[in-house]
Amino acid sequence: MLALDIGLTILQLAVGAAIGVSYRWIRTQVLTRRPALRIWSIDKSLPVHIITAQDDSDFSSEFTVKVYPAEYLAAVEVRSLLSDTIRHSDVNLLTSNEFRMGPFLHHNLVCIGGPVHNRVSRVLLERLTIPVTFDEYTVVSGVTSKRYSAVIDPASGKITRDVGVLVLDQNPFQESSLAALLMGARTFGCPASSRVLTSGLLKRMETILGQSGQRWAILDVDVVDEFVARVNVLESSGSIEPS
Image (cartoon, rainbow, N blue to C red; front, side):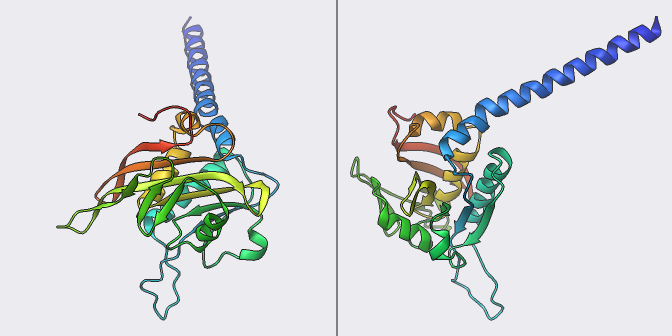
């Protein structure tokens, strides 16, 4: 009798574990992987290059390559999604100074950082027609004509609010590949853009952005102690009003 009870207990544990694994798998597929595949639209026959801006403000004789921490965080999040969730086998991370303009321009491109510091973003924005422009560090909407700027606390000199801009479109150099730009009025707009495209928000973002054609959004970003605390959609390419 004791052996039977032990056997039933083991069976119940095994069934519970199997149900838990199945639930997590289904949840991952529904909330993350399937929306990610539709949103990112990666051509898996071509490599992906994730390109961050390079910080040359304190270049020393050691020739150490420096990147902006918030932008590098965004790049790592995107690389994790593309490599682990979408399962693309050839995802590369490099700075805009390391990027080879000629042969690489026809691949899938993910640019982290705006045109001021990322030269690849600058090249793509010159060739893409999008309803968002930059006036130095101010984001300008071509739909509403509104201007969005970061807020800097005068006492601490720290950014307390930023503006994110994300664009997903065909690569102007290769129609079958993707051009994604994750930008900001300042640096925290970049990880905010990556967050909404790599997290559990993917399914909601699919509705906000729309499911085909050029997709874009302008984001309101709360920054607390140099971390992105909250992200809200201000304007987007989708058919619904963001909350």
